[in-house]
Length: 246
Ligand code: SAH
Image (cartoon, rainbow, N blue to C red; front, top):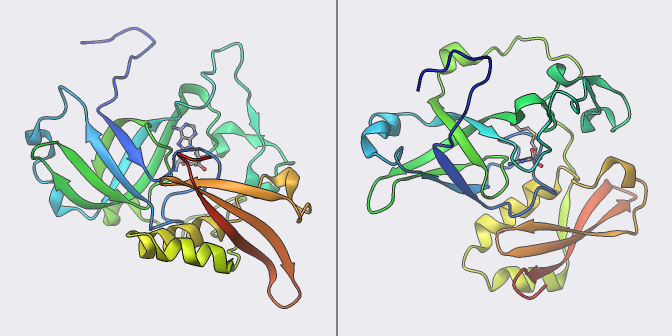
């Protein structure tokens, strides 16, 4: 459809089946949790294998997607300033100087790893390292070109380096629960990478006795932030609870 009006309509080309059932805890950029696995299932009429021909030669992709769980900001309700978690959730900066999920048009952009292209019987891409919640609508897919898309010397404003990581430890109970799982190795890696980011909301930091749950795969991973005299802030997993039971 040609669209010469001021507005455009986007139809999702695919939907992501993600290791993250819930927004809470998802790392704030892709690649911070390389163990996250996803299936990007192509939607009709874009589930034509021809549309993916040649993609298998690329190791990484750009996904353009809709932050469908963020409010749809109409011209009346949009806010020019946001509070990035990176600045402790207090300082405000311009929405277009941020990667905030609360933005006009709700478009997200993530660089993800392409593990495999599947075309039979279902047409889907096997991905790793994404930062998207389950069911996110993806509106475009493009191959990543390092010679065009990488600028190691770029200036990076208020986000100069990746956020600091914290050590993660497991209680004996959590270890025993992990040991029973077929996906124990990739699950352990995912839990470690996600909790290393200290996903607690900025306003809760300092309330160290509080317990939290992060949903990963089919589990609620219960953890606490502990101040350790030698290692500083440590994330301690004390229990893995099945989501179907919680
Ligand atoms: N790399 C993307 C996303 C950065 S924000 C970009 O720069 O555009 C990452 C956060 O988006 C995650 O921590 C998660 O909480 C949130 N998120 C992921 N999928 C979402 C969705 N479909 N709707 C709303 N928020 C989402």
